[in-house]
Length: 304
Image 1: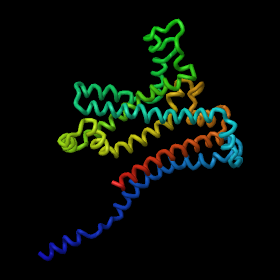
Image 2 (image 1 turned 90 degrees about the vertical axis):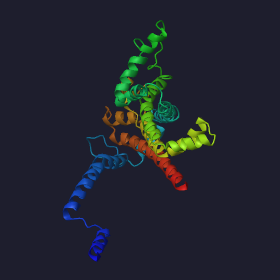
Image 3 (image 1 turned 180 degrees about the horizontal axis):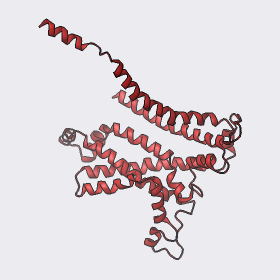
Image 4 (image 1 turned 30 degrees about the horizontal axis):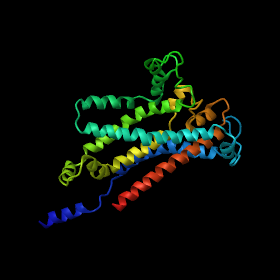
């Protein structure tokens, strides 16, 4: 009996990894870490450094300090419209597409008929890239052969939905929201399926209505999903590129920071230093939103 007791005591001690275990851990952790450094953080640090240079990709690197940022903020007319469009993109996804995706998730979670069909249909745009969504937007909103003008019967003086700089951003936002809504719906639907049914029953017994039950009982339990949806929405709003580039290469009212980065780095000018400065601004704005949101969520978790 004492032998087995001593044996169980020895098993409770810290486990010592063998040389093979340590080698496997190093490989499993080292390779993803190395790839992350090479693919993500390497280009990030390089962009920050190059943003202070006047390099064109061919000649010698010339250090110019903050000149690129000064020109960007004061002498580059496309910059501020691109900033406004990115913020508008973010606001539209956060205030329109995301709540609509949540609404669809709630309706489907109630067990409506043909719910599987609705899930598949609404989620279908998510499997499409934004470039393909951009081509679909052209088919729908095209001035001469678009489906929308054909449905409206506007043939005498058709509306140029994608050519008019006053309205084309809204048409593209509708197309982007079409894709984003399905993604949000699936995330919230998975979260709603995990909610304990006894919570809803207890709220109903206490006399709470369905609306009160959702906002006071169900929605607070979706906090982890809210964090994921919030981060994804910020990322989608600030990294938007494919759809506007497919429509008109991000010009004439569809300027975005990501398009300006591409035009300056791989365009005819080959202003890699200047394009890197725009990329750094986009990085700072993105990190600002994401870090602020995550800090608020972490503080909320600790206060509960």
